[in-house]
Each structure stands twice: as structure tokens, then as C-alpha cells.
Amino acid sequence: MGSEPNAALQNFYEHRYFRDTALAVVPKEDDFVYAQVLRQLRPYLRPGLKVLDLGCNNGNLSMFIARAGCTVVGIDLAQNAIDSARESAEQLGIQGVTFFRMDFLKEWDEPGAFDLVLCSHVIEHIPDDVGFVRKIGFSLKENGVLLLFVPALSSSLYRTNLLVRGRFPHDDEVGHLRRYTAESVSFVLEQAEFGIRKRVFLDGMLRDWFLLSKTLRVFNRVLGLPVVRRAFNGCDSLMASVAFPATICIHASPLRKTHGDGI
Image (cartoon, rainbow, N blue to C red; front, side, top):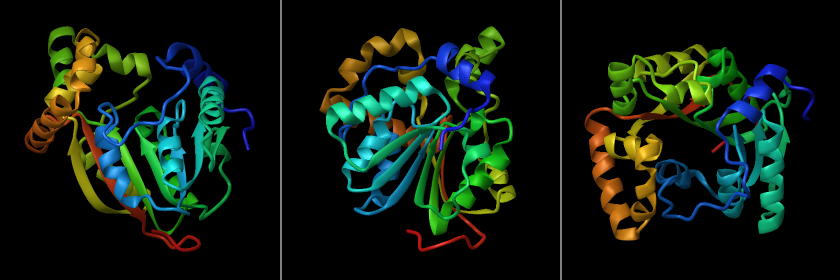
């Protein structure tokens, strides 16, 4: 594993992409930043589950999953992210997780290896998103699950920036090639031969602005207080289900038979 990936993309994600390569911490059960992802992820986790974390960054979620007793492989295109993830896991004594630098679409060659694939905010960076998701299907066991998160076109922060500036600088900074509607991400999954189990709209106007707006990040410490966090996330979840969700989460499984037993 880990042969040379696309040099231009690797350079972008190691040097131009905003990335926190400080030592990672394992998210707590009630973590504010990861609250929405953990809520969707947690029901699947059980000891012995084989999990792939695609675009693992510095390994926060990979280590959370490993602490639940799962066997985890974390993959990222950027070597600095993988170096940080490996050092973090070693420093924190996390067992059952391995990290690789890899161009997943080009290099992954093991069929039916995983029960669960977590792919959080990755395919919007990939030119061939259908091919990438199809490769995920190849890597999943029969009845395995893909938990996919993508940025939505309906984001109020995105729309406001388009209206005021004519562009959304954040998307350029992080290398987004596209955003999705519920219909367009569903079409990608259908083209890649996945069946959708569930679709959830996340990150309403409150979380959208507080998590991405650099001006408002100073309030994140206050929002981390348990009472404030619970009230904030409860209101935001309700808002996201009604209008302007910033994230679309899809629970899906490959339609074609692969290998082994899944979730």
C-alpha cells in the first residue's frame, strides 16, 4: 500500500489545503464539532467491525471508531495528514487502527474488505465521483454500508456568499469541485450501483455559520458547554430538516454481490 499518488493533488492537500496537522484527539461522545457525524456513525459500531475511514485527515474519527473495538484503516492522499494520524494514535495508545497514504481510486485492490466505509466530505474533491463511489462498493462486503457525507448546495452560508461576493472562498480554499443536492448525490450513488437505505439532512443554518464562518469561530468554546451544545444542536437539527441544510448524509449499500458478510 501507499505507492506514489497524483503529485499535483498531493501537493495541494499537503500545502494549500487548510489542514490541522497538530496531534489529534479522540472526539468525545458529546463532541460539538463532530456531533452530527457521530450521531449517524454510532449505531453501526461494534467490536470486530472492519471499517475504512476515507479521507481520514489526522485520524480523529478513525481513533474514535477504533476505541469502539473496530478494526480501522484510515486513508488519506496527504502524507502530512498520515504522519500526524500515526503519531497521534501512538501517543494516545490507540490500538486497532492503521493509516496509509494512498490514492484510493487508483490503488485500492482488495475486494470485500470492509463492513463499513466512512466517507465524510471527500467525493466533492474527486473529479470522478461516480468511479470513486464504485470503488467503495468494490471494497465493501456484501450488505456492507457506506456512510457518506457531502456539502449541500442549499447551505445558507454558501448561498449568502454567492449573493454578496459571487463566490464562496471556502470552497476554493479546500478544493471543492462541486456541491450536491439530494437528487444529484442520489444519482451518483445509483450510477455507482448503490441502493440508498436512508437520507438525512444535517448542519442547519446555526451550525453552518458557526462551524465555517471564521468570524464566528470565537464562540465555539461557549458552544462546547454541555447545556448550550444540546440546545444548539437540537434547534439546528430541526432547522436542517426544514430548510437550508449544509450537509447531506446518505446511508447506502452496494447492489451488486461482493464478498463476505456485512453489517
